[in-house]
Structure formats: C-alpha cells, structure tokens
Image (cartoon, rainbow, N blue to C red; front, side, top):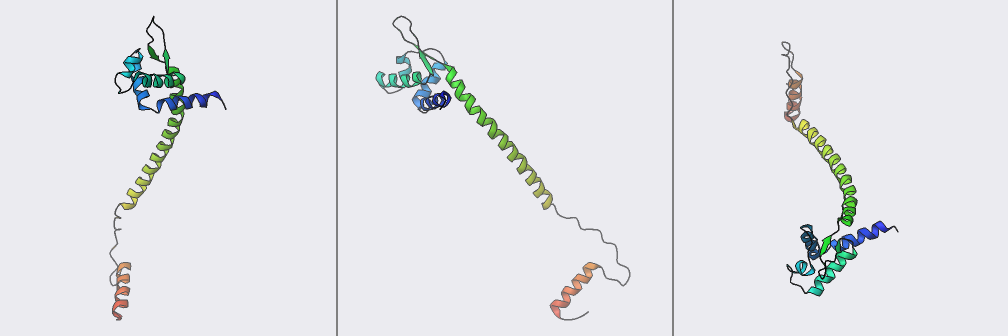
Length: 150
C-alpha cells in the first residue's frame, strides 16, 4: 500500500471531529497557543492537547517554538492533498450530472412535443353525394350500435 492512502486516511480521520475542524478554522486566522485553541470549548487542556496531537500527527498543524511559548499554526500541504483527491471525484460527478441533465432536458423536450395538441387536418369538402371518411366511420359505428343499416 502506498503512503498516499495512509496520509489521506489520517487527514480524514483528523477532520472527522468537529472540535478539530473548529481548531483548524481558528488557525486559518493565524497562530494560536493551546490555551487559545481550547478556549471556545468546554474541555480541559489535556483534552485539547490530545486533539492538537491528532492534528499534528495528521500533518495538519505544526507546533513552533517562540521562547517559552509554543504556538500552533496550520500546515496546508496535507489539506491540499485531500482537496486534490476530492477534486478528481468532484469533476467525475459534475460530468455525470451534466450528462444526466442533458438527457433529462432531451426527454422533457420530447414529452413537450408529444403533449402538444394535434391540429385537425383540413378536410376537403366531399363531393356531392359522397360521404367523407369520418362520416363513413361514424355511420359504421352507429350501425353497429343500433343494428340499422342506413
């Protein structure tokens, strides 16, 4: 198995938790300490540290050193790999949906044409004494119903 699926698995596993996604959203604004990342949540610092370790292991954030401070910052390289992987499937589905849309439009156009009322054909007046085809059909139908021959 190549490293790419393992990297993607770790990335998606890290992103599966809403707390970690919120922490990454905060890091988009700039560096933040563990305390700053934990502040919006009702959790202990050790619990926040565990979330940060998962993000760090997945390669989504980096802990840096500034004297005694250890701010975290986002690392977008792994996110880009995940986005690229998703994008190939997005393009595939967009193509499929576009083809389905074209097919449905064609079907709808055919149904619309089929639903249009047929214009009655202009009939030429019958020659004197000769019934039209419609009159013949009506006569035959009437004869069958009544049993009389007109």
